[in-house]
Length: 124
Image (cartoon, rainbow, N blue to C red; front, side):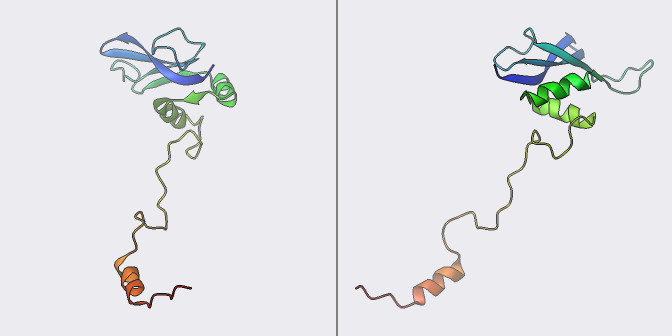
C-alpha cells in the first residue's frame, strides 16, 4: 500500500482548514485517512491570533517518513517551515543540474572548421 502524506481540505469555501493525513495514494482527496497527523489553518484571525496555525504530531510524521511515506509538495513546504524537514532532504524537488557538456550533440563552429581542414585518413 503506497502511503502519502498530503493535505485534506475541510471547512467552508472562504474559511478552509487543511488536515495533514497519512493516506493511501489511490484514495480520493477527502477520503478516509489512515491517520490524522496534524491541522493547518492558513487564515490569519483578526481578533486574536495574528499568525497561521500549524498543529501536528512530529513523532508520527517522522514515523511515516521513516517507513517510506512520500509527502506531497505542499506538505514538504509546511514541514520545512516547521523545521521537521531540512532544506536539503531527498523530498525537496531539485532543479536539473547544469552540466559541463553542451546540450546539443552537434560540434561547435570552431570544432567543425578544424575537422574540415584536417586531411582524411587513407582507407586500408
